Image 1 (cartoon, rainbow, N blue to C red):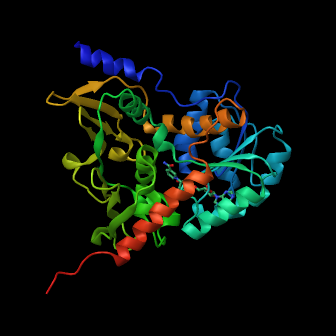
Image 2 (tube, rainbow, N blue to C red):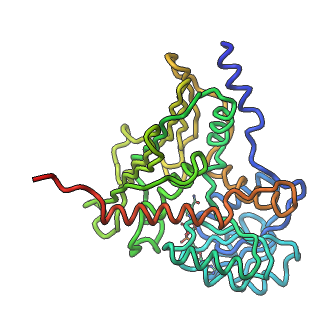
Image 3 (cartoon, rainbow, N blue to C red):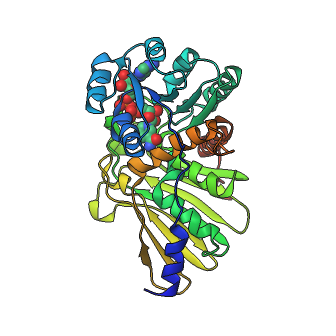
Length: 360
Ligand SMILES: NC(=O)c1ccc[n+]([C@@H]2O[C@H](COP(=O)([O-])OP(=O)(O)OC[C@H]3O[C@@H](n4cnc5c(N)ncnc54)[C@H](O)[C@@H]3O)[C@@H](O)[C@H]2O)c1
């Protein structure tokens, strides 16, 4: 093993999400597929106790609660609150349009993690922000990709200076997404950017902050003619010295050419993180991280865990560490998440409006 490889592997030590020393109980509202596939497996792995599971559908709540040994399953948020410890943290994982129905039921001053997107529109996001402030909630949005093990590792490597100055970041996703898993998306006017590229937009913001401008085009696929746009190209403008873009095609049915990765290029080296979950959603394939120094061959680095479910430990862990006073930042707070929603809104506006007709 060469010296460079050792240096990179060393830089990975400590690539951990923030975790509370003494986890508080979680009351989960919404017991749908993402809670079953990622939230509850992550909490089990991290040792976060789950006090209650609430869902509009009692049977669904009961069957998921039984599988994960959650002591209470109910359709009533009030009942879940009254029967759970007072210091419980809330985890709202209902469709975006239902978030504003749920939040008013939570006790003022409580801590809550809200599934992405933060509402279906920027207007709803602003209402969620205003309501969180009014109720004194410590509220964060579940933009968990930042906490995927390969993403934490990539950040550590970059912070250790091993990439030099980063001048390029690309997100390429060409996969087959089974959109029919989400019945509420069948009639959604906004699909790909709002429900999927939003993760990449948030990831890019976690690296470079807000872009100066957004240029985008999002289009529909004749093979899923009933759905809104499922393919997008989004350019995030960080000025003259950085190329940053997201290109997604969620209807690519050709196995051998499927791709799902984030790649960074710096003056000293390049990194590529593969997001396996998209390659066989929701079962997924493993994530991986590779690095090449300038002029060197690519080497795979040792990382442990995957976006699903490990990244979900990070968003809940960071909220709990913050309310316990163990960290002083809440990276995916609603105050930050609103800017991811503003970036998404800019992408939709650009898609409708931008572009230069050919000169005559
Ligand atoms: N990586 C991610 O972060 C990720 C991945 C998938 C889905 N999601 C998000 O998670 C949310 C839920 O997605 P899902 O895949 O679990 O959907 P789903 O349709 O499988 O589940 C939604 C559940 O919410 C329940 N519900 C709806 N309104 C409710 C209310 N007012 N009170 C209580 N329960 C209510 C429904 O009965 C259903 O069981 C969506 O906003 C989606 O965007 C995030």
